[in-house]
Amino acid sequence: METVTLEEFQARCWAQGVPWEHVAFKCPQCGTVQSMASLMLMGCPIPEAESALGVKCEGHYSGSGPFGPIRTLAFVPPRGCKMSLTDPAPVLHSHAGLKVVMGNFSYPLFALATPGEAQVLKAALYAQSSSSEAA
Ligand SMILES: [Zn+2]
Image 1 (cartoon, rainbow, N blue to C red):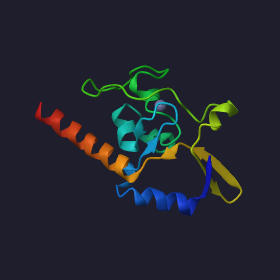
Image 2 (cartoon, rainbow, N blue to C red; image 1 turned 90 degrees about the horizontal axis):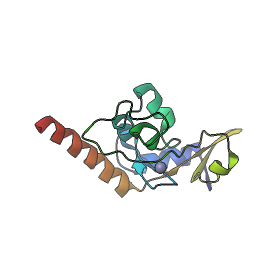
Image 3 (cartoon, helix red, strand yellow; image 1 turned 45 degrees about the vertical axis):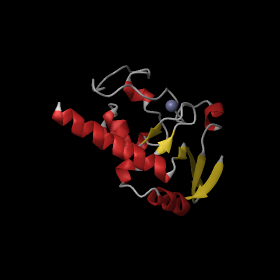
């Protein structure tokens, strides 16, 4: 696990070259690249998306998680797994890719995706939404 300051973390987010809702993390368990935009597409409630980002895998919302396919859209294949860093088991925290330190606090996150991975995901989401409008 890599420890970074909040400033370094934010710099890496912006280095992905995408709007904030498309800043992407990579699940340490299944490798799914995910952003707030893709989490919401998988059925994550909008108010929850920011806190789920980098902490809960899309599988929690896409139908492979414990809550079932609440809002999964038919044209989007389920992605992700049940990985969550919010579970209390400390063993899970060893899967975190990043530990962001703010003053006396620190919190574990999935590793950030590369700029290329974030941009591919953003392009894929736009392709999906435009093809659904055409259908
Ligand atoms: Zn996963």
